[in-house]
Image 1: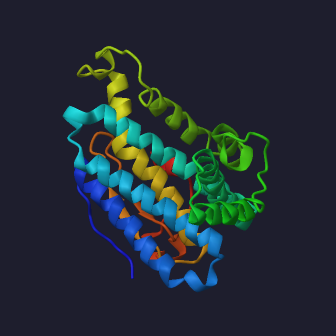
Image 2 (image 1 turned 135 degrees about the vertical axis):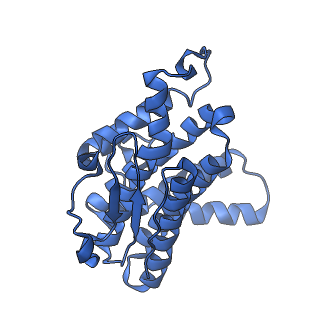
Length: 257
């Protein structure tokens, strides 16, 4: 009912490991679907599939050739983790509904912009207009779901460090001229960026999986991460109370580092 595999220090192995863990939690969530609020379930599953897709893309890229693209992808992982934590913090059903309806609002805006005489399209627009009436964001910024910036969401959930990782990777998500100095060999910043892509993304995702597993009392799963450089291994159970023999205390991932 859960997964355990001693993953080596290989980055590729550990990325495959977190993909497997996401799949385990998706399967367990599906088994609990009938007892989870529909909006919360749909948004949780959507974001987990998005995380799975991002890790799959990182796994497919050769980092020595496409490392900058990996940084752009990692940015999405940090953003998704903050959003999920924010949804689960409080008012879960309303926030999940707002997350979904914000996309409906954007879709409606596009549909109205390119509206024509097709009857079916008019009917679709009318249905969307009726649905977006339920959109009730907490903040006033209409550009952002729930009207609140990602920085504010991170602050509310205690995810300021995750937001800092998001900002670091955001530097590579926008088109601008930059030299290759950041990617020169044997530079501390390059080592930090690689940690962001290949290790911290995994740790952040594991923290989210633990949040989900504990919220719905899922069996969860266990992952084993190695770090020969610091001579510290991490054994992480996403629902610690299900794994007494592991004797893993509940604490933030950075306490393990």
